[in-house]
Length: 441
Image 1: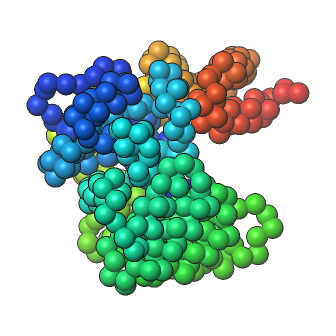
Image 2 (image 1 turned 30 degrees about the vertical axis):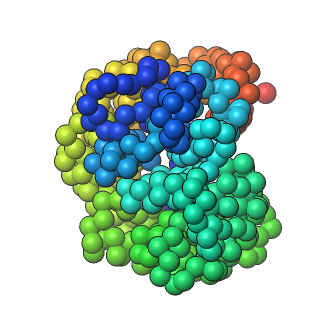
């Protein structure tokens, strides 16, 4: 299941401070922690930080749908907002101070003490974010008690990356909270994410099996997905994993059936994941039909968007759906449109290039990759070099592919520490690709 990692590894770009204009979405200061902190202190407000990246699908969705929502804009007036592009080298000192494990990550700081009050990892819908802002306000005012206090203590431990302590606090909050507690889903999802980051994979999967049935309809899908990931990606031996995966698949399938019945736009990703699950079971025809449905839904949702940012938020889903259903040739023009409308967005160029490569148009794909390299920053350049090398290999230009991969590794060595740490998965992929080239030693 492609969605079954708890968080996409991997919105908000730019270097200038955004002030004085009527917002199409909430007004964020971008990539300037000092300016944001000074403003927060001057206005005696907490600081809300969104750590994201232009290549992160849930980050883009939140940018287009959550941060543009009137309810968020109204509530966010009580905070100073900072958008941090983790790929921009200017943010290295901030990432050293507040490391992030996955994207998106939301962090609320007491601006006077620069102490974290709340940390949230992963994509979130509007209601989730509004609840997070309420939780942060309670944490800063010391008004919480009972299960809500335990939830906030978990948030503080999570913000310090004390994942085992955070998981324990979240679990205690779930145990103490009443059955209809409005924060139950958030507490369970937070506990699972903390267990994932603590690499307590068995505890994560088994906790998901125990708690998922108690969650609301939408919460069951996300929590089952995270628990499934813990079972799937744990190191061998893991005799406990298969029963956990089987139990969680049942909840996942129920969540998918309910999403189909209700037409939930937020849970469109379930189509992709269910198609992957069916294919893993050997039901290729069922997987193909679901991929067709996924493609049609994403195409329709994208067409409803009225802004370039809104359309771009659907493009990663559209590529996945088009690739699985065989519609890449039909969607190339839409990806080209995004690249034209968002000329500073390297991920748009990369998506155009990947589509052209799959269509066998290698020279055009390489040209698009070159455009992406001019725009990409930091560790994300490694992924572009890797994609370019794969295109060259397909074109039979193996020596040039090897040179690109060697260039990527050389760039990785020059990355600042946090950029290099965050991009380790890309470094590993580049090394694997280099070793797999014909004639590799």
